Length: 398
Image 1 (cartoon, rainbow, N blue to C red):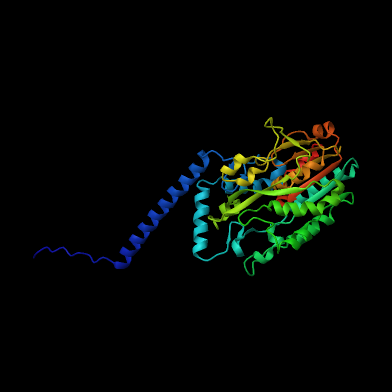
Image 2: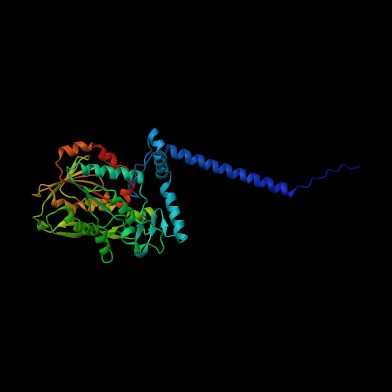
């Protein structure tokens, strides 16, 4: 008899299972390699201090403490750190934005793609814990009865020009958050509410940039007109100002942040006194040990962030002195919204010291003792103020 080897018939089900298992194994290996790559890349990549694209400081690795772990702030800070420092972050953001545009979405990275070319930053939810600390610190300063303390928290575009938002955009009521903030202020604090004057002019004038989260110089000018009386500035010595266009090619941070309207260009205006007899100013950038006879830095118009034409950007501490015969001295705590407001304010004071708590690491008590301040002004936009974590710490050093 012939020995004939019979071939076993392959079970098609078992063969299919084998190849599926092999495919799953390879996919798992690839995913593991990718995860290892990004883990190693995030470890060895130096942390960036700031994002030129978004024009902001990036979160840094937080220091661990038992108290921070207990109140949850350490994990919150660490999540922000991981999000800001993730490798190839800008590339992933651009990819997501492009996919959003293709799918017809009008919201990207906290920014609405609104009507008439407007990009509008969403209203943030106040950080209640830090907000309570900041309000307490402001109230404590006012209750010392050494200074007249003012707050000027500027509503953002999302609150002032809601008609430019996409239809049915689900936005938080920033007006209610501002009302709740004011209810917690001490009677000794004089709050300057500019919402009505901005809202009244918003139909006729451009008070916010199309592609940036800041108000325009014109928006600041209208707010200043409304604030002058409350600040007690002498109207009999009103200093006439004129607006000059210094750029027609500004594309702001909301465009970079969202990926929308990247080709949109708009002007930047600065205000200068009409009269040559108006008080002159000298600006001292304290930490940089640099002085200037101007509040504007035209070299910034050649850079990505042209809004930095005002004072060359943000600084820990600026000392503005003028030839004004008025003896009043003002201390300002601020964010970048103040940068185009200060040139309107400067000619009315002998001296203005400006502190940005996001960068300031000095002793406030030494500044307060060296200068005989009459007034203190807190000037922020609402979104930044509601998320601020630095102000109370700076004030507590006093």
